[in-house]
Length: 343
Image (tube, rainbow, N blue to C red; front, side):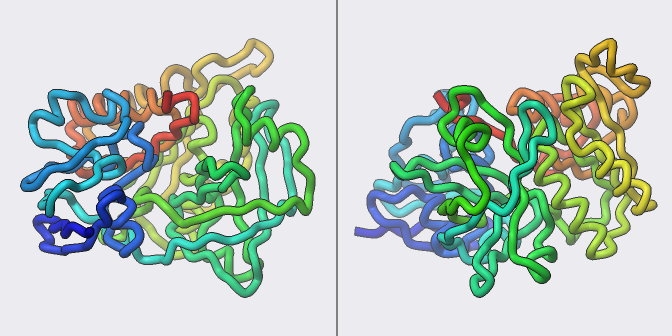
């Protein structure tokens, strides 16, 4: 039994199996619906249901409230159709451009850049290139089928020389995957992964100035976007704000300084929320999204790409739109929801 989904205003249609979510079917068929976590936690895939009925699986109230569901909204990542559907959703040009595939990868290096951050480099099969947009992510498939998502921190053009990806992994004590990364993981270990996923990447059809906003390891996809801009010679004015607790958490500070030195259109503003006395910090302090608002009280002509802790992403979206005039459609986000955040 299959149902047909029509996306407005594009008029695109695709088929959904009876027990499949709308989003899973869209990804399978290369239809570019917006999404982030695929897990009912972030709300990136929220769309308006114009016709038809769906059943919603488990999801968080902050992703879609009962009132929003009553008002006709749906989360495509956990909605299974009961009838043919019509949904209203902006389509993301390029989101379904590259085939999603499963592949093995081998740990080539593991470097602890901060007490709780590891930079993991993985070698990919030489004959099976992973094509992706800077900002997208892959999922590791664990032995029991559970999945963990991490964004590529290197731009896609780096695949040409030596197929491999760089990931930035924060240790979540008690986390099955990260305990392994920070404990028993060895070089040459083989992992299984699937990707690319996600609709968080640079919209290259715009010439608006860009705010790149990262907290913690949300820096990973932002780094990939910066590398991509440099490689493509994209000259839109951009400012990178990276918020961390203390100096040691700015685990690639020198990399960011170097990028800003090499790219005349890029500024770099590190922000610490709890600098330690020994940090001898002379730079900006406070919540990173509030520092953006001090510097750029008028965001009406900008695009914002935000990545990191859900609380930072949600605060930035709310305040930039309400207080700085940012058009809602120009806020692009990837909220790093951990397994703990999903329960």
